[in-house]
Length: 334
Ligand code: FDP
Image (cartoon, rainbow, N blue to C red; front, side, top):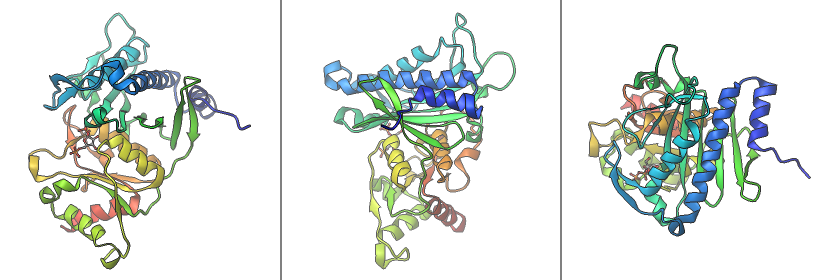
């Protein structure tokens, strides 16, 4: 019988054998994984747990919060604040940063998360998930929002957990991408894929087509060519998938390839995009790049974007390398 490798063992070995994750980072990742298990149980209870529906509050982005957005946010804070590994946290659901209270020791890491991505899918029993990104706090006393404003290429760990038919944790510490599946009987995450790779080419794209009339020319050109299929300039037929939860769409791309697009569009022309840089685009972009794919705003690598504020938005194209590079080329030619 093949040996099962738990997340704990995987991380201990990363620390011991490969020496590239410090003990504090290992602790942080284990704590995040524990929070994922709690959130997974809560999501699974659905209507029986009284957790579905809106919370009647808005987050800083003006979006209605779901009860589960708030519950997941609290679970992550409670799990992480006392361990001594963090200096502060930031979340899609909090206006400003959450500094670890004085009664606990302060660590050197900064944790950013979208506690429940795809929350419009919660009530209809479609996959949702948690996305997180970890950076090191710059040297100096205290901690401020400014400390978080580092480009994605400074991340030291990133990952997501999909709460779908299976609960799956996918993570990188800068040495490839590993996937763990929650064994509910054992209560532990078990390694189910290592060195995940996104194929360079694909025949599958993910975009919300209902926004087509609002896109700019390069995106229209790219999708139009895909839609022409075998008879068009691409010479092959394309398939489309749009779950509407970024975690689920990115998970499919990591598993079998594809390209995900959430471009800037004319609906809110003053904003660079819908998705958030720090806790959505950066961690997903790094995971995809670690798996051999690419992540771009159309004009530059997502990981090179210098954030100017915590809840910064960004245009996102990520997935199979040749497709993302093609979109970037269409932008440079426009
Ligand atoms: P949601 O608004 O449901 O939280 O992060 C935002 C996000 O979901 C992504 O998960 C998803 O890819 C996208 O928005 C869906 O947006 P549209 O409803 O505009 O398609």
